[in-house]
Image 1: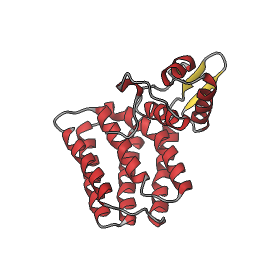
Image 2: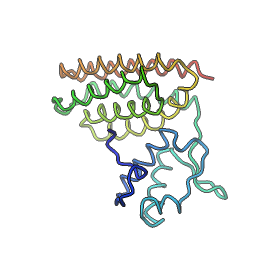
Image 3: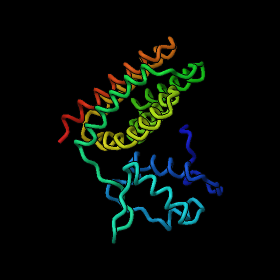
Length: 225
């Protein structure tokens, strides 16, 4: 299960912090639940999360600062469009950040982290018999969260996290135009290698494996028009 609850999954009223609302909306944008150019209705969102529009606007301002939405006079708040060249540039930066991750001091790699990767790999295998592109996207997001949790350096964590969510939605958008089964195979192979590197406690190898996978994604982006 993904670690963020979603308001649509239960009729129970849940109180959310501004940080949680930010993460939920950011994930929806990344998963293309809110497509590029679509409008976000402040009143509906405030009602959904049970907050006034003042704290909601604080969340939307943060999303705008991070490049996920745009406020336009007369149009309101819309999901930011996607620019292919910008996405390519972000993936290049993300690959370089893996070098910084390799040189950073990791958190302790225990059995729980290995179990999370193993469970995620099983979810990926299931896609072979039940293809589901949103599930594929959710697996990638969860894998990011696991790898993100290995880094102690807070500045590196925040920068890498923002770049992931800025770029991953375009990658998910491309899934309709590329060989989906091949992407499942590539992701499963990456996770199997990551499991082994984490089992060895080798953060440099872990970062190198993920960097190589980002390189594969970039190669697909370079073929896109």
